Image 1 (cartoon, helix red, strand yellow):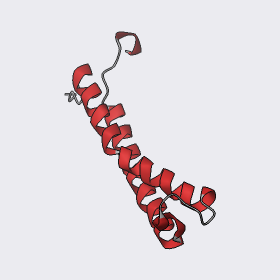
Image 2 (cartoon, rainbow, N blue to C red):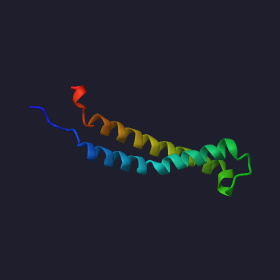
Image 3 (cartoon, helix red, strand yellow):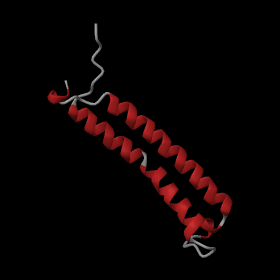
Image 4 (tube, rainbow, N blue to C red):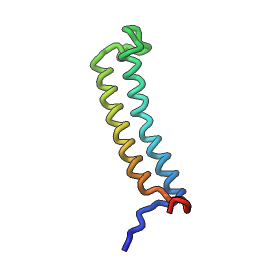
Length: 87
């Protein structure tokens, strides 16, 4: 007997939206970290971005959050609704 693990198209869209919104802080942290690492050159728009320990922390936390978002999205995509032509 086969279990039906698929979600409805409406549930899929809602969950993907929530996953993307939850991953937004990770993308912001990564962007700020990359700016502090490569773009600031000691003259950042915020003084904390001139501190390399803060920058590496932003990169680490942002990367971790993005990894969690990626894994969660992949798991949901495996359960996405199949189109009739995919059967």
